[in-house]
Length: 107
Image (cartoon, rainbow, N blue to C red; front, side, top):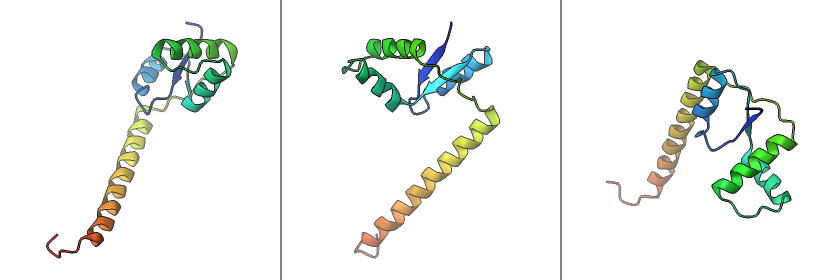
């Protein structure tokens, strides 16, 4: 392949990106908002998998995107641990706020 571009999909693209990188390919991960703006500028208002694939292919041919930096497995693991901790802290804080709304002391 000439150039490989992926749309960031909330982490679902990570395994593909890591695999391609390990195989020696340069991969560019693109912000979905930017991809959608490019599609809109092309007049592609519908959003389907075939349309998205065509838009990404055209974007790869049109724009010079630098390859994304692929983090090491250790760095990715640390990122996931930090992200999970942030989620748990947020849940804890939400529950503390809800607890103050309970009128019954038993709750």
